[in-house]
Amino acid sequence: MRRAGLKFWRMKAPVSGLALAALMLAAASSKVWAAPDVTFDYTSKFGQFGFLQFPPNGFGRATGVAFYTADELLIADYGNSWLQRCDIDGANCEWFGGFAARRNTPGVFDRPHGVAVREDGMLAVADEDNHAVQLCELRRFCLYSGDQITEDNKPSTALGRWAFPNDVDFNAEGQVFGLDTGNNRIQILSADDLRVRRVFMSGGSGLGQLDGARGLAVAADGTVVISDTGNHRIQLCDTGRPVNCTAFGRRGSGPGQFESPVGIEVDHLDRIWVADTGNNRLQVCDREGSCTVLNSGSDYEFNAPHDVAVHPSGKVAVANTEDSQILVFRTDAQAPQPALVNAGFNDAWFNPDTAGQGVFINVFAELGQVFVAWFTFDAERPTADAPALLGEAGHRWLTALGPIDGNRAVLQVALTEGGLFDTRPPVPTVTGEYGTLELEFVDCETVLMRYELPVLEAAEGTVTLSRVIDDNVALCEALKAP
Image 1 (tube, one colour):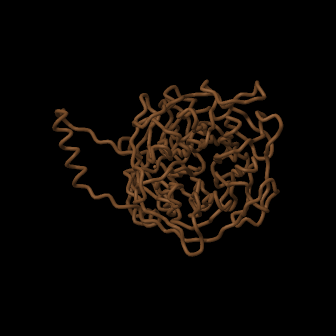
Image 2 (cartoon, helix red, strand yellow):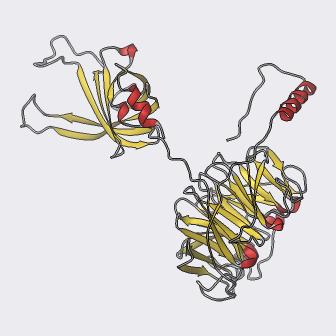
């Protein structure tokens, strides 16, 4: 699995429960939900059944798949009790892990079912028959969440212990979410040492309850999306206190209906991809449960697909479990991100409340850097007899440079001193880390500048900057367009 937002509205005045229910019913009945528009083109497939054979001869049963890079896949080879990393065309594969006499050992797997890849390259593995979750650096070491005391590892309901875990994923903070299938719960583990941070969900058919759930994904906004396999539905839950869940789907073969769904993924466009295993198909759904059905095609046939992974580049990989194959497709790629910070911001800026002071902003888009020169004054007025052969004794220039990050840039302020007007010697000296400026490019006409200058008593503040003239606004807007 691999890793958008829920919208809430608030009444301006209190209403009765009956009135609120009527209002919600009217809203629901008047809204027409459209199934997601999905591009889905078959590319290739690879793999065959190969029990206890080394790659690239085949898979015992491929039950989990994740993108390791845009062109490499990480595959849970359930029947062979190891993981495989393969080129997306299957030309080259390497394996690691594998069954051992002592089962509950880090880096040793017993029927791994689900896998996930974190942005730093760490892997999480739902190690089903070891009743464990492992966090691994590829081919180097693993951390183990489960029973490492007794050799005869058994299911357990204790915290940090597991009963047939089937899937894993990471949230934006790098924490591990483990689907503890046999215990009908989810355990959240710390990002670095797998300590239990939270346990939620229970067994049953109500909201917030699970029946043998086998697939889990964490959306970009932290929503946990679950293939509630035995209840033939999809649940979406926050991780608040208490946990709030919604659900869609029921048992059946129509759009938005499921038969024992297993794998699940939330893609870069916030679409929910479901491996509708019992119906031998995929479904792509929005959060309200409107779904587009993807059936077998002339070049491929879905046979109990157990997992699906989607890369922002538009590549899709499906673990076609009963055929021991990986199917590869193309879907909609992530839209190009607009150039939020561009050369159209190059201009003179000022705060009307402090007229006579101002900022020059220079954006070097190709270098990913921003340079600022801030003309201002000292924090205290100099005495009337303070010497100044050129200019005014209270004048100050601060310069800063830093990298662009989205619509922001954090710049290091430098102090330049020791030089003379239009003279080479003495060579000025530059002292870095004099302070920081953080620029937030709100729009093409507004920039927020936050400063932190430890040399001052009032060391922090925020300045709202506007352009001195608007000549470059049109250029800025044009360069922001995707």
